[in-house]
Image 1 (cartoon, helix red, strand yellow):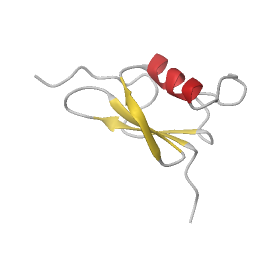
Image 2 (spheres, one colour):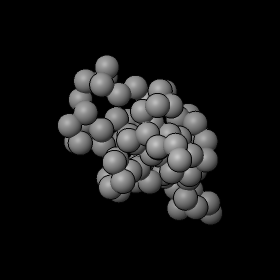
Image 3 (cartoon, one colour):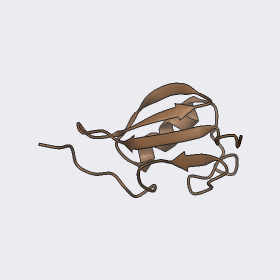
Length: 74
């Protein structure tokens, strides 16, 4: 079985945002790439060379790519 990347950005939820997990731990609800970067920084992954948002070996984007941030459902 293939192993998942250490960071997973889950599909958008109806109320807006995307859940982010790092190494299986939920770290928050992101509303944009900046939030994902902040969660990585808080997890101790500060150097951009340590983790690249567009690298599928490092981050799995489910339900849309890193530019998919739909507005909350009304």
